[in-house]
Image 1: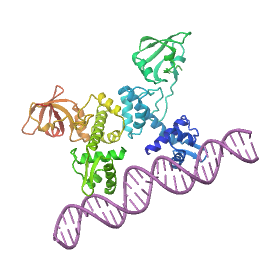
Image 2: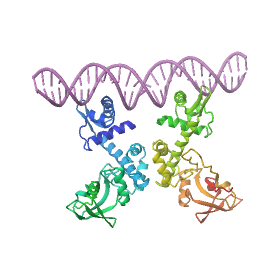
Image 3: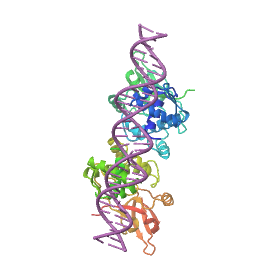
Image 4: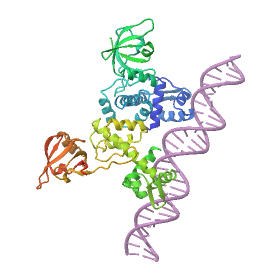
Length: 220
Length: 220
DNA sequence: TAATATTTTTAGATGAATCTAAAAATATGT
DNA sequence: ACATATTTTTAGATTCATCTAAAAATATTA
């Protein structure tokens, strides 16, 4: 697989929302900042290789193999994002570009070892799940902190707003990815919350809560 | 700079032994497993970009800018090698191929942060020095353990033989990169050594000693 | 130094990924 | 449903890195 082929597969995956949906030529062109005619060319090639199902003028969808391929790229991308944030202290919104490059590195051993080094994370710094080696998602129930019930416990897995001021706020208040969070109380009037984070009690506004993703412990 | 251009610059650097020596077309072709005619093409392009000095039929050498470029690639390569060995537990002889890919990742911030994460190492797992950001080597005095005097102290920085059996031997005897080593005594008869490694006393054969590189603490 | 061997370059072709411009198919609005 | 708009594909050109085969420059050696 060439670098470019991988990029197309990933784009089709994202546009199809991981569901092998039919995706249009123009949509791919826009997503990849390229021309529709280039997309047609590449899509034909991918079709010949059996990575996508293609019918002219109708659209493309990922084949079974194409889907597996996409998941493996997504897995690499997200593992690298975790690495960049957790080990190299990048901010959550600075990692995408570099991860786009790192995801193309070819070495199964590398990814296995990186995965182990990171402690087998199941979500990336944006709270998106990391596919397993076999291409399976452990399904993650991800909710905004502002939308969960009192007494809900979970793990902070991501941010909605990744602007610098917000990330700085989290830093100052020592709220980080992977922190265990429990909702203690909720103020109906302004939607602000009392939460317990790593055992520490904090009061946060609704504005903050509506930008933090919680991975809910599977209740049943 | 394209990926291919970077590979050529690196090859010219290595063939010229970091000295901006004149390098022949055939030598580059062999080093890169490509054809001389391809080398000529690329070398012309690099010359137009000012990265090398080229005179037809005579050879190429790196320009000042070309040399800086090469050093920055070497820096990235070696930092990644340290990462792979120290953080991901790769064996010393497994890292080259992956580092060849990683060295092309474009992000200054990434390399700065990686450097910090690794504790600003000055040599890679093979004992070769890592150029600074500015392209300078802190000069490293690197000697085979078998060739230093009694009472010499230093840091284990690399291996000459990187075969699996030898690396396994090192593992079993808990000799690793960065370990502090002091030569306590030397047996003239067979060249075997008593050494102290991280405070622990070990006796090693000459065969082992002649495959371990020591970075000598600057004596004067 | 003349003949031969080697090295290096040129000329022209190929494959990958892209583009523009025009043609073909499909979708939309009245 | 028909004319128009939009989407998609085709055809042909371009750029990059590579190749083969042949020509040119340089080196070697008898």
